[in-house]
Amino acid sequence: MGRTRLVHLGSVTDMPELKSRLQADLTTAIKARDELTTATLRMTLAAITTEEVAGKQARELDDDEIVRVLSREAKKRRESAEAFDAAGRLELADRERAEGEVIDRYLPAQLDEDELRQLVSAAITQTGATSVRDLGAVMRTVTPQVAGRADGKRVSDEARRQLN
Image 1 (cartoon, one colour):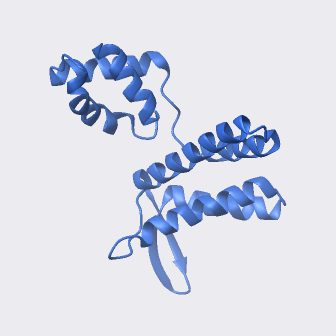
Image 2 (cartoon, one colour):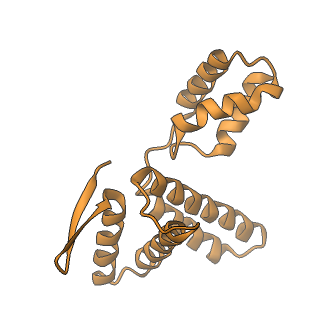
């Protein structure tokens, strides 16, 4: 993804495309009085800002880093929905799922099982892995290839399955 040029009060700054799209969609959601999308995008942009100011020096995240933040936020929503389901709080679980769906609009398409199986198989061949002890090497090879397109647990489960 590229960068969008933003002119603000005479100064020109570059902003990642994904972040400017999130901000534009937030404005649209506010104008449309879409409470779910507005709240979700505000939380997501807050998570991005928090990540930008974390560490010793503030920096602007690029689109790949923003996708990682979005993936983390989507995972939180899935886990919360499962916890609320287990506790019998179905209305809260539904809200978490709906927020997850809003976030999913900004993530790359998820890998299907066959694509994931092929990527893991290729990584096993490439690394020469023969047992679960070699899982770390396989994960280091596969993780950059699936960034944002598959949950780490799915990748790990598939790698373990193939190595057993």
